[in-house]
Image 1: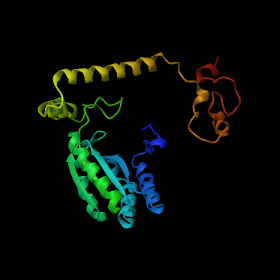
Image 2: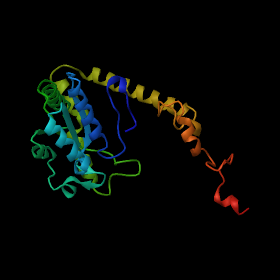
Image 3: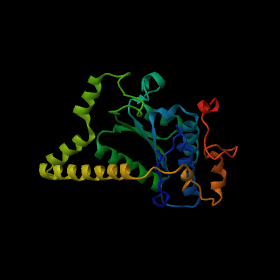
Image 4: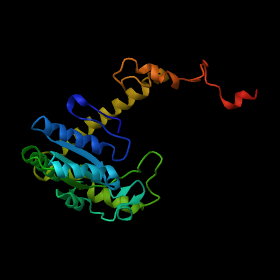
Length: 252
């Protein structure tokens, strides 16, 4: 949720559930207003479809025929709650009908199936100015966050079954081997290259110095005076102390 690259038209992730939906819908509106032949792909989890921003955004997209595809990554659990316990209609793609737009569901573990459907719907959005909902059924092997072991609300057997039969990397590997587009040696070379890149990134991060508190707002705002606003967040602010005074020291 902390990645962004506007130069590549990637507007970034959002920590607020469904917070990206109005932004993405607004971007699609801008494309229409300026007659630009592009479309928006908005990613969200199934937990966001019960938020007000979902209904408001899809309603506008449906009324104005905006070039946007809402791709819902349905991983079965919203944090620790199953979809059917949180959504009156757990088949999310069907909700598109409420806004008179196209909706469909695909196997989110199958990379080629996702690429085909998303490419087709984005082409339709660009050429026909039609929005759509694409629900990708996937699965989260780990917990929702570092504070979630991911085992309190599901069994280890369920996780193992998904990993054994529906691992997207292994599914793609099997298809490429079957079609003769890769052999086992090439697959192993790819694995080694990926592991090396990951290890290099981890080593670089661990060897880097910790950033100072003064750099908290660096690269966050374009306003050259924004640092003044964050000066009050320094240790001891806003009372002007040079260091942060801890409660236990007050009594000494």
